[in-house]
Length: 110
Length: 116
Image (tube, rainbow over all chains, first blue to last red):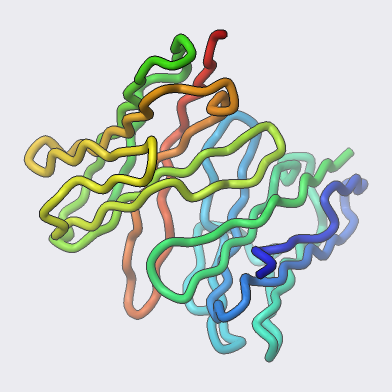
């Protein structure tokens, strides 16, 4: 049983560019959440998707958007990248209760 | 607003000894859940243990146990018989429920180093 998988594992982008990160949830999990973890900090909640709808959103600007597909996989899109968007982006899936995380995508904006 | 506090930026422990990682929380909700995650240098957040606010007994999972003191709002993680592979960042998190969904609120983490 595959766990949560994210792609790519590492990414380097230039300021102003756009990026798309992908997440496949654990089998049977229908809820996907995205978190941003800046260096030396705990993860911060970006948003959560359920039944292809954004169900809850954290304190992130509209440059951060997402999507969930019928097979429950999800994408995180970030437009107009800033240097401060450099972070580890973690995807978590859950049926209820505990969230299970992927290995993350490390994004570097230069 | 809910908040998680981890006051130990770094901890050392000798291999085979036990170590306690501190976590305090703040919430006005009567129903909540507390989690501990391990994050190795690879980046993946590994779920370790969960404690529900109404659970009568402290949670245990193998070498991990959660010392849950509700009145003091603390949920400390105890790792027994430390191993070199336990060296990692450890995060305490609380589940915040809003409408029909929830999110996790994390502390700032504790870096544990196990000495041989």
